[in-house]
Image 1 (cartoon, one colour):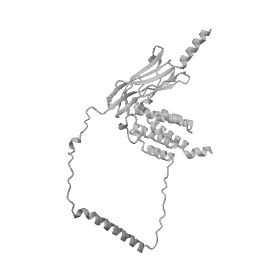
Image 2 (tube, rainbow, N blue to C red):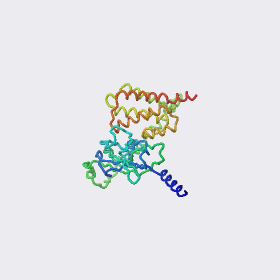
Image 3 (cartoon, rainbow, N blue to C red):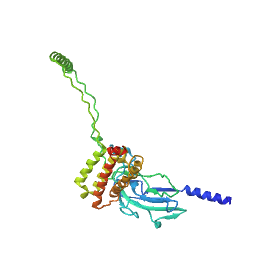
Image 4 (cartoon, rainbow, N blue to C red):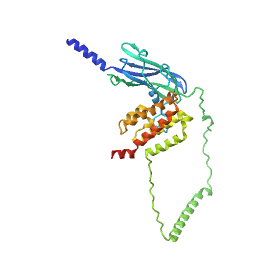
Amino acid sequence: MRIVYIIFAFLVSIQLSAQIVSIGVPEKDTLEVGELFKINYRVNVPYENAIRNLSLVSLDSMLNLNEMFKDSTAELQYADFEIEDYGSWPVNQLEYKPKSTEWTKRSGIFTYSVNVVGRIWDYGVFDVPGLHVEIDTNATVERMPTVNKRVFVLPPSDYVHQDTTSAIAGIKTIIDEPKTWRDYLWIAYVLLGLGLCFLAYYLIKKFKKEEVHVEKVEEVIVIRPAHEIALEKLDRLKTEKPWETDIKEYQSDLTFVAREYLENRYNIPALELTTEEILSKLKTVEFPDVHERDLKEILTMADLVKFAKARPTGNIHSEFLEKTYDLVYHTKRDRMIEEDE
């Protein structure tokens, strides 16, 4: 009986120490800007139902590691990655849970593999992250960190660097000229300047009858409330209706207004974070739970339009605009203070 207990405890320890590994492997580590290349994404799990779903949201966080190619106006620079072929991944779908038939089992490990073909439109050195894994809340597993594979994105091969060194003339010695009386004119100019200054001082003292007192006016910098800025931009979107001509630009403008408002209102770097990171940060501040679902829908749809080239119906644009209005109005600072009182 004691041996049975030992074996049972050993099996439990194996189950509790099971880990999930997600990694993306590019077919090559050096490519030109805009060149198509394939990324093989693999997810290893200890058992089939260890995860809730997988997500392509990690493709929005390919960080540029080369300082010389970064935008000087931003602290972090992410790759402009465009998907051309989703492989077996459902098109226009950001999140997906693989079917039972899509898992392969080997040596007690279940593996899901998918090939995605895309291109990067920026120069630099980028980390290729694995698929984002959402673990099942009932699963006794932990996510294991992996080393991201890196790709080097270079300028096109036909790019010619212009050498301007051949146009520079050689260095010649300095020619000394003999001094003349004109070389000492500066002394006369200095004396004349001093005389004019003395004359001006004398005339001011003589004819000045009363001292004019000028009060200093302190410059007051007025910081506009975050909700005023957001509502002003939302009014402009509502008037111009940009979704009727360019859906991608409208979704980008709408999410920028929402992210900018959250950054100014709750003091979080929302303009630099992914959707999941923003939702995680908002859990640490006084953000109403009732608006968290609307915010996730708005940001997720923008990700789908940007990366998956989704084309939602016209009604959803005005609906998301009104939800953003509602979010700003019910979370603005003066309203939150009134409710607390």
